[in-house]
Image (tube, rainbow, N blue to C red):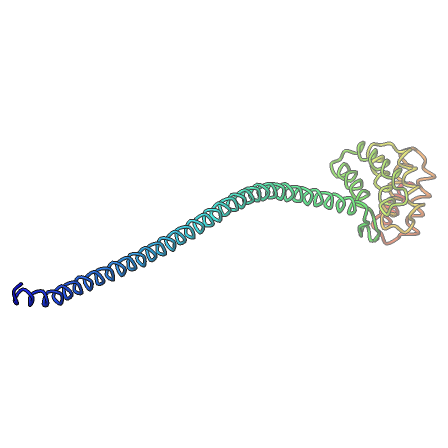
Length: 268
């Protein structure tokens, strides 16, 4: 072997060693890079998994919230339906009560009108029973409205010259109200109504009853004069003379007393 070859043999191992070392370093570097890549991939996978889990949990939470919201919305709708039903029921009840109130007000108004009518009727009846103060022929007395109405009815016939009706009404008045303050005047006008019908016998009795019942009545002089006239018509001259004498004696200054004096002279 030649020296160069030996030299080459001696030099070769270091070069190979260098190459081997380089290859080993490269392999180690490559192995290190693969591990780092795998670690990064694993980290990335973990981050993706964590993100997916977080996303899934978020979606699940959102779904739960949506479900809860849907349930609340459903409950709210049911509550709203219940409230609407209650409102409708209240509206119906209110309408019914309004109708009842209207009927009640109508009934109250009718009762008030009936009460007013009853009050007016009661007051009318009360007025019909309450005595009234009457002044007649210089006398004052109390008379019920019924007495006054009956009296006015009888005197309307006297003023109309309906002496038959007047006598009937006055006689009925005296039978119904013998103690009335109108009674003396009723007897006087009854006697005159009979006198006007030339019922002298009944007229004499009526005039005598009037004078006996009310001797101080202002119409007594006129009644005595009419009594004497009726007696004369009945051809009872003596009774007529006595009546005229009593008239002149008791009422000399009256117009009837002066006429009685003249008639006494004629009777002689």
